[in-house]
Length: 327
Ligand SMILES: [Zn+2]
Image 1 (cartoon, rainbow, N blue to C red):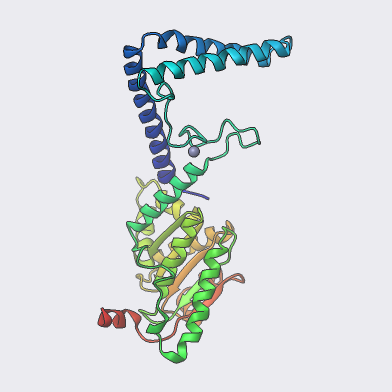
Image 2: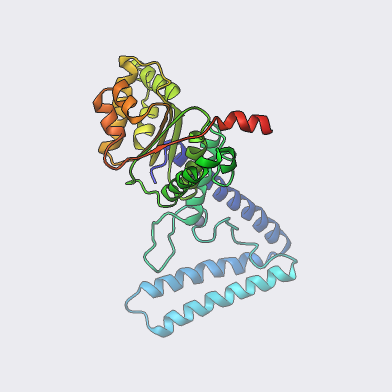
């Protein structure tokens, strides 16, 4: 779950905002309740002091069971008294307490109060937030909602190719379902408009849903940006780092980039870093594996098509053209 610094920062900011919103709303409720019911101030003070006494008794080896029970009961009675005052004044019983969006972590994003060894672990609400932010980030550069498994239509393929493409679809579904950062690469090849980008997108959707980070880009744009950032001394290299460290990289349309020594070097550095870190990459290209090996040097081809790569050929006629005709 290697999310980018930006996604983690955005999640932290949202959690902090949730916490401060809850605190601010609580302060406003308390002020209103205290203004209407002056006796609440004493009740509130008793709750604080009896809670402190109960904790002190719990941690005091010299305290007897009676001491602990007494402190706890005093606190419970003080709470009940406060709740009764609030009810009488027309307030909710929990009006004096902050109402967090997540009761498990009080919107801190981390579990703190559990008795089952979860202290410090990331909370489910924080994970969901990271997933949503990752989805939103990718959706800005890629039409994620359009490219799902359920929208992959086999009827666009010639009838004699449908069985084959059904297997391709199943392989991709299985890859997405069992995805882990140690998974092997996928290499999609075939002509334009045969569904390579669609199935890449469907895998991205599922992999993000499962809580992994993804980077997507067309090879021409990504390699161009990488080359520019390498020659720009002011560059913070965040793009290069994100592409090298994300859980899944999807490199679309490899072979369409300007094939020069700078883009090839950038590609080599990228695929080598990912292979060394055992991070999977999905590549789609018009090149067959043999053409890939001929087009790029063996250092690149061997890393993209290493032992744990599943090579998938896409067949049929241009689906995009047919979809446009049917639309
Ligand atoms: Zn939470």
